[in-house]
Amino acid sequence: MAILVTGGAGYIGSHTCVELLNQNYDVVVIDNLCNSSAEALRRVQELTGKALSFYEGDVRDEALLTKIFEGNAIDCVIHFAGLKAVGESVFQPWRYYDNNLNATLVLTKVMERFGVKKLIFSSSATVYTADNEMPLKETSRTGGCTNPYGWTKYMTEQILSGLCTADKTWGAVLLRYFNPIGAHASGRIGEDPRGIPNNLMPFIAQVAVGRREKLSVFGNDYDTHDGTGVRDYIHVVDLAKGHVAAVRYAAAHTGCEAFNLGTGIGYSVLDIVSTFQKVNGIPVPYEITARRPGDIAVCYASPDKSREVLGWQAEKTLEDMCRDTWNWQKHNPQGYGE
Ligand code: NAD
Ligand code: UFG
Image (cartoon, rainbow, N blue to C red; front, side, top):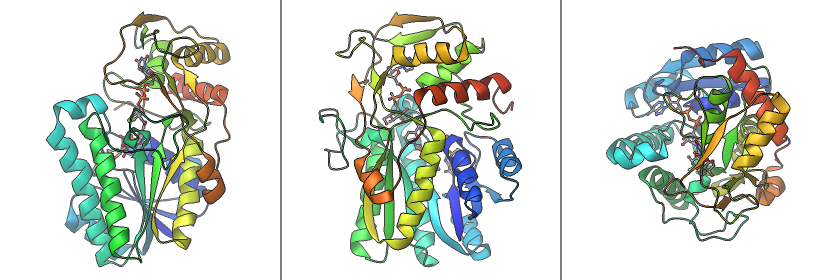
């Protein structure tokens, strides 16, 4: 069975390619490398001892997609390709809507033409409104996004849901990720953000390795056990395995279905800092600063539907996430080094 992985050179995509190859799927990747490196794919093949096909280019390029579908008997598509920086999306809304929405529109158009109607989409917990009770269930309220990035996720869910309503032979799986962190246990692939990291764990890792002086903890006056923000951190390898489960589910089902990929456990910023320091024996200097605009106090998933329907659940601990992040960062202080 052949899977087309858009954005497969990226952080989550590269880890998912490893799991797919380990399960003997044929893997075809399209990525324009706007936020990643071809070196990640070289290492995916080195780790698994298996080859994948790589097409460098943009998912919005209909001619290239046509060539890929002509040249490969694709059964299912996992669609990771997208821009993901929340803050940047506020200043570059058109770029985000163009990239993230047009990629999905062109992709599904070409899929339809080739009769490939199984799509797994990278959605996000950001589609849930801020006024929901925790834990978030797939039936919790969605919409009311506070930035263009979030709207692209929400709108793409609507596009795929509409496709499945109109044509009962379509199957779309919307995977709503919570906070992916960690790296492959080998330390060969991991998260390699460009510029100053927006997210907590890559920032901590860069402080630990000496690339940044200290972490800013955005607020300690939230209504949480230690005042800092609480999130549902999930190991990227668990997340990747969730995609393999979704591929199996999609093969047997039509219609549009959303699933949370989270652990169901919330940890605070200071929980993460102290666990990282403890398991790795390395200091992470930090200071408390003002809240970051747009942040909420607490966000964690109910993983029940994914466990019951996909037969998937996260297995790795916060210690694993902190250890594997550091193992990747210390062996690759400059990431993939490009
Ligand atoms: P990433 O930036 O590492 O990977 C995305 C990949 O897509 C990159 O390799 C990039 O080069 C590629 N890409 C972007 N636009 C493209 C286009 N038009 N054509 C071809 N390739 C293109 O990000 P990631 O963390 O691996 O995230 C993967 C997906 O998961 C994204 O859609 C993201 O929005 C979503 N997501 C991520 C998180 C997170 O915290 N990392 C949370 C929720 C959802
Ligand atoms: N934080 C800090 N300092 C930092 C970075 C983050 O204290 O330098 C705190 C934040 O305030 C928050 C927590 O660490 O309490 C996690 O922040 P992240 O930026 O790592 O993650 P978010 O939960 O804000 O956002 C993530 C993804 C988004 C996605 C969202 C909801 O980055 O793409 O989860 O799923 F939309």
